[in-house]
Image (cartoon, rainbow, N blue to C red; front, side, top):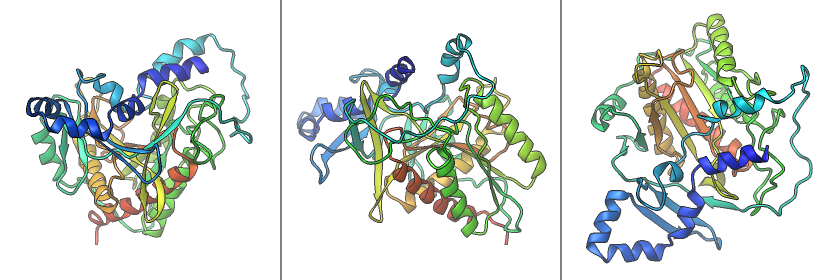
Length: 378
């Protein structure tokens, strides 16, 4: 398991290194040298400033390939994109019980391993990024032009919401057991792999907070807590697809499917805690992933998912400053071919705390209600 975590860390974003290696003084110095400043602007900007607490930083990163590390090292790719394939070979050699039992959340912790760095991602720059009219950004990793995507972002989804008591939204979790830090601290326990079957401490807890707000807003919702990634992580998307298909068949009124995950952002032995403070409470920053079809994914209506992603992104961004990271628009499926309102939301990272993740779920839910009110039938 340690080998697997090290692999994830190498693949995940090297945000700690990038943030701490370039203090505000360097940023200021770049601006005094015109040709360096121009090059930096082309590569992407970095703004680093001290918060009130010592050794805590707020960073804005938009690096390109030749600046310190490639962009895959500095910007999250969405945890889990390659993990299933990587784990498949290892799982072939593992003996699995037909009844593996629960995977508990630890009761006792050590705090002598790597560090946890708190940061707030702000606005990115670079050719891959563009802003939405109502707030927030998109990171475009496809061959579709930014201009075309901006036009699409201005269109509302083709479906409408009905407040008639029937389910309109399905909340589910492909990687149900993903979990978080127990509380705010400076170092983490390397013996914990951030997965548990305890629904009060995994993604089910976050989904519950979203569902609560939908119910308060009068929007019918089903929250499915099926575990798809334990005992086997490999194949979890296939299993979650079957769950979603079954629920859609039973409740054809559902327009929206939210697959709620958490990200993993790290550098070496350091975890990143992307966080924003809203109304005096810390909340994990969130990232929407909206898939694009390259012609091989049987997802012809992907642009309709993007319209919904843009609607929600703009609402969350306008409601809560710096709450969102850019939408990741990339050639991915994530079962988003099952409806025209299917998106994946990464809630924080494994460096965030349970409380921060829960608070983020509440904010997502509140913004989602406001966004859906714009497309609700009278």
